[in-house]
Amino acid sequence: MTLGEAERDFFQTANPLGFILFANNCETPDQIRALTAALRSSVGRADALVLIDQEGGRVARLKPPHWRAAPAAAAFGTLFERDREGALEAARLNARLIAADLDDIGIDVDCAPVLDVPVPGAHDVIGDRAFSASPETVAALGEAFCHGLLEGGIMPVLKHIPGHGRAMTDSHHELPVVNAPLEELRLRDFHPFKALGAQPFAMAAHVVYEAIDAKAPATVSRAVTDGVIRGELGFEGVLLSDDLSMEALEGSLPERAEAMLAGGCDVALHCSGKLDEMEAVAAACGAMSEAALARLARGLGMRRMPQPVDRAIVERRIDTLFGGGRKGGA
Figure 1 (tube, rainbow, N blue to C red):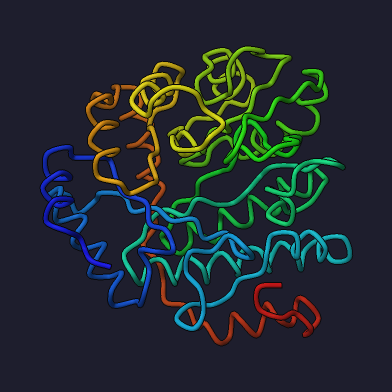
Figure 2: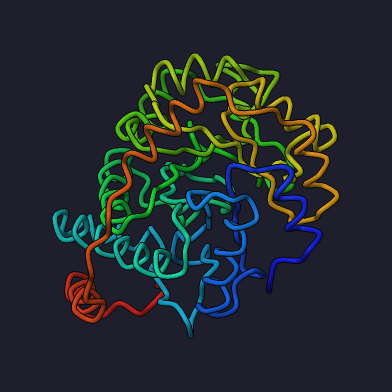
């Protein structure tokens, strides 16, 4: 997959903050290196962000044979139950290897970790993408994962703030409505996000929380964004919307983008890759606000220069921490 002339011309004119890659964009390391370089060249900014969803397990845009199959988050939660320190080390090292893969091909933002805390009966759209059903465990492992990414020069994105774990439906297809009392949300769902409020990026959930705003999902709700995400949780970073194209939302794509920005998101995320849709969304989005630019500058300031990592040694250490029996992607 290469960058087409029409796309290049559009990006040059629209000057988006960055780009997000999916599995259909990813063929080989050399191909992605050329693509990320072309994307940044199209906007004339070497610091243009390139994002990807590389959580491990079933959500991984980069797959074997070119890239390592990382475990699903739940594997670290299982290890945590018997070996807390070993699980924290394994989560950090796993993220460090993911970071090495991403840095090697020109990607600098990973839409991970998932900090959602699942409840019994919830839709399996989260499932084993969550570290645990314990908020404290999720917070601890999520922090270790973030540290591993940052050590490797990759910026993490917390998902899906302020919590998608109670959703009984998949927001890719319909709008989830959570009716749990606010105090219950505070004790369980919000806890990991509050613990990691200093991270550079987070992605808002397309979920209605009736106890906060019964009429609008978090992505378009000032009550959720200002009152909870920025207020109670103290999140200081750049707030991304989840994908504009998801069927949980109403209205045209431009209307959705406008609503998300008006609702307090700093960035509207559009993922279909369709040129006509990108043009319509870009026309609806103005320049980033001064507050958003300040949050972005703070987040970019968290970048670190990655040091070389011996992948074989780190992989053996992870395998040892899991007791030698873990299979890739388990």
